[in-house]
Image 1 (cartoon, rainbow, N blue to C red):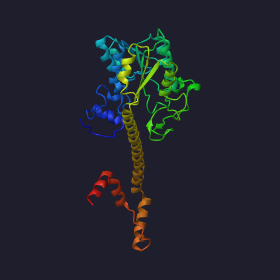
Image 2: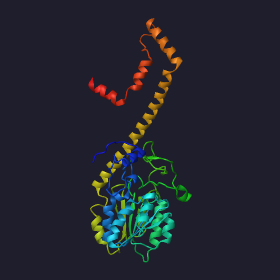
Image 3: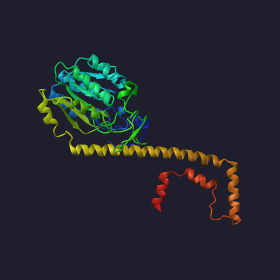
Length: 362
């Protein structure tokens, strides 16, 4: 089905969806309202890979960290029901969609707490999906708490979002005050991120509190996962590069270790998928940058239009127009055009697409 309108802002896009004019989403199970810009930000876009991992691991209990609006949660509940598996969700500020989902599914355990608070209280699970606050400190603590609560020296199946750009090597903070000063990178509020640029750039993809620089120690989600894996030679990390990157971590002593490794081998750091993702985020950021420039141009044109409209009713402008015409009649400065009321009216009435059409006809 084709889109009726393109390049809408977030609010206009949601309104178009509500009117039935924009029914398209990347994943059929994704609630459009949770990703109206269709960045592919929802982890549900990697759900098929994740469910395959859960089935290979024989998981019967799954904890989702950072459930947000419940897109993936709903998908996991559908997977869990036939197998009798338990799904739990953690989010300190669940969206209304997730709250309503928990009310319709009493088997879903919803913990309204930060990941660190909830993980300290919960019993261990067979698998964890981590998609909460995307920074080194938060992810490292989540991994530490999960590992410590295991009944033996093993490890549950771990699946982590945003191990690719932009958060692989750059922290971002939902609530900077929850991260101790010693563990928090310098930030730029509302910084725009663009692939290949270490520092935030105006017009890039907007994030609330991104780190002021990319790279370096203790910076980013992938850095946190790699440091966690490096602490134990039996921990293994596979990276599926699609949709901001999905990391899968398991223990070599797990009964499912070999079949899981075999299943993920074709996807793990696959160079074709990595190039597709690099191309996707580059164009995603480029389009956002262009839309930002277009919005600024529209705002500038609006101000200019307001000035021109004030000129039309200005007695000073009428006097200047009369003097300009008299000067031309007298043969003074005839090389300068007369700027009069009719010229301003023509400029105000014309539209960019009309001007382009006029040029095509000439």
